[in-house]
Structures are given as C-alpha cells and as structure tokens.
Length: 292
Image (cartoon, rainbow, N blue to C red; front, side):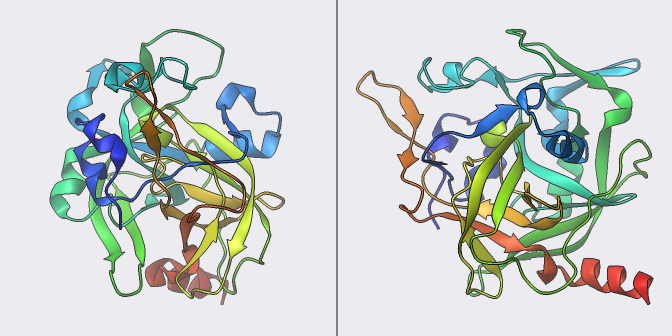
C-alpha cells in the first residue's frame, strides 16, 4: 500500500497517511454540486458527509464555519482544477441509517479517531464563487458516538468502518445499498465525496474494470486522497455498490516545482479499489432481518 503523496502537502490532514492514493483516468470528470446535470446525483450527494477535524470547526450560534487552506497554498499548481478551493476534509462518508454512517476503515481506526473528528453534511459549493469562506448550518454537523464495526486487513485488503452518530439525522434520507450479490463487470459508476479534502465533488463516467476479488472491485473512478470512504454508486439505480478506499498515486511533480494531478488512460495504471458494501456484516444482517 502506497503512502499518500499529498500528505506532504496537506500536513494538517494527518489521518490520510494510512490511505493509498487515487488519480484521474482519461478526462477529469469531477464537478461541483451546482454543476451536475443529473438530479439523482444531486439527491445522493445530500446524504454524503465530510470527515473534518473538530478543531477546524467554529460554531457561531446556528451556523458553523469550516477553516482550512487551499490546494494551491499546499503545493498544488495554480493551474490545477479546484486549486483555490478549501481543503478541510480528511475522508468522506455516507448515511446508511437514521444515525449510521459508513466510511473507510483506515479513516476511523480507534475511539480516539471517533472523538477527534466531526461529520459534516452540506460541505459543498452550490454556486460558482471564489469565496474561501465555508459555512454550514450547525444542524449539519454530527459527532461520532462509537464504532460499530471496523476492518483494515492486510490479508484480505478489507477496508471499512460502520459508525454510530451522536444523534439521528432527520433532514436527509439514508442511502440504499446492495444487500447481496455483486456489481456487474463494466457496470457504470459514479462516486461522490471529498477528493483532496475539497468540497463535495461528483465524478461519473467510470465503470468496473475487474470484479474477481470477493472483498473489493477495481474501477477507473477519478478520485484522490480525501475520497477515502466515499460512496460508489451504480449510475443507473443510485444504489451504493461500495466504498472507495485506495488507488493510484494522486499527484506528480511539474517542471514548475509544484504538483499536478496524475493522469492515466481509462484502462491503465492500477485502478481504484472499492470495498464491497456487502462485506459489512452488521449492516447487511440488520438490513436482511428488517425484510424478513
């Protein structure tokens, strides 16, 4: 497992050091929330969250201000996409129950991690703006209460965490997820999360490249560090197929002495690994019990 190249640049996002990198395949398909033309993607994004260190959040009555630096200030070339946006998130996650959230196992490894970070919904950009001030309603910020199930296995490469939030989420709908079987080879996919700690990005135009491993499948999704824990959806149905956990190196040196996103052809480089949502036994057992 490779160390994140971006860790040297995003030193404040220390939790990402246990993750592997991600990359752009073909054309960079990432768009901000306000740019998506697919209503389903917009709806799904409403139930995804950013993992942000609680010390980077300042509560002001009914709102919370998110602090952080830009990609450009952390060594990414100014010509790179989103270089002037805030990078506050360490990982991504998504709602699967009234107070249940799924993320990558390397994002939450202990109760200390659980207590040090908050889960922030609505960390996104809804209009074309250069503003570096990001404010969300206080009601969009949740704490991790406890870890229900977590795995970070070197033998199987399993990588997931199911956590309980400090209260129920009443203003957004838990996502639907696969309960059995597995995604089809070459099935089209979309990922929603926080690449490089940025506000919500939606990236579609990808598919399942290999599908033989029982614990994860490999894709050509355009993802970066910070996407760890992102929900990977079936493009047509909106059902969660898995959790983005690792992939190719993010950035590479440019002749100007700064870094730019690494770019691979659609079927080249190592690909991006997605933990199958069906490996989370507590989640699947609970879902199947409710249907009986």
